[in-house]
Each structure stands twice: as C-alpha cells, then as structure tokens.
Image 1 (cartoon, one colour):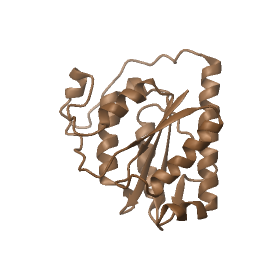
Image 2 (cartoon, rainbow, N blue to C red):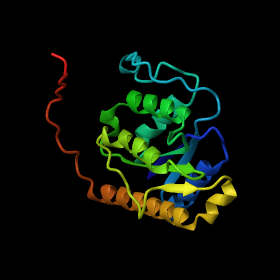
Image 3 (cartoon, rainbow, N blue to C red):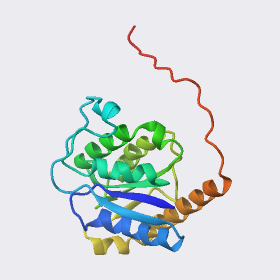
Image 4 (tube, helix red, strand yellow):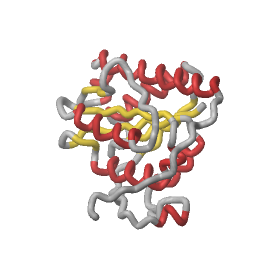
Length: 205
C-alpha cells in the first residue's frame, strides 16, 4: 500500500512539508508506505494543451518531477496534494505542476484511486485553496478522503504548525481515514464498475 505526497511549496522544509510529514508519520503507523515529492523553487511550466502526452504516455516537458511523480502515482493507491496559500489559491508552481500531472497521467488511470489535499497558510485563504485542489479529484472519479475539518494548518514557521493542535489532529485523522479506505478497497478486491461510453458535448454549436 502506497500513498504519494506532493509538496507544492517552493520551500522544501516549510509549513506545507511539515504538514505532509505529520501525515507521512501517521500513514506509517497504519502500515501504509508513502513518499514526499518536492515541486521545488524553480519555475514550473503550465500545461499548454499540446496533447503530446496522449501520444508519448508522459508529459512533453522534462524540466521538473511531473513525469517522476506520474510514474509513482500509476502504481500508488492514493495521492495527497499539499500547497501553501498564495492570494487565497494554491501556489502558481503547484497549480502548473498538478495540471500537467493529472492530465498526463490520464483520468482513466486515476479512476477510483483515493485523493486528498492539505493547505498551509499564515492566516486566511485556506478554504478557497482547499476547494481549488479538490477539483483535481472530482474530475477524475477519485474518492475524496475527508477528515474532521477542512485540511488546513496555520503558521508562519514549521514550528508554528505544531502549535495549531486542531490542524495537526485534522491531518492525523485524514491519514487514518486514507489508510482505512485503502485497506477496505484491498479487502473487497472488487472490479471497477463499468462506464458508459464517453460523450463530449460542446456548448457552442
């Protein structure tokens, strides 16, 4: 059992990383392996809708870890996205990274894998960023794993994160729930439900 954790912060060891680290520790206590990938501080190219990934099986842009994370995600049971809050949204680098990741992996591969996200902020904007990130899962038929509150942590430094005791508890419950649902899916060992043929309807005739 494996969960991929993606740190969308430009700071490798900041508050978002600290939150993902709390989740990683809790997943381990539940017998679930995980790995944290860092988006990094270098500029990340956004998706250009070139559709090369449909032919190549991977994103055409090679200057970051999108294809590395994509390969790991194909073999994983779930993914947790993490991002700091910038202007009440996920960071620009995280958004570009996640856009390319989800599109190049393919929704058919992501279908019924488990997804969740966490956001980190000093004060405000967490709910808007949280809503933004959850849309990656709901378009890809991924069950969204929830906790006892919205998955947000507050603080200006990594040390501050641990002072947000309610936020820490929320992340630990999220990890417990993710582990439980993965184990339930493994135990059931059911085939995926059949899908009707795909239909694309344009609104401009």
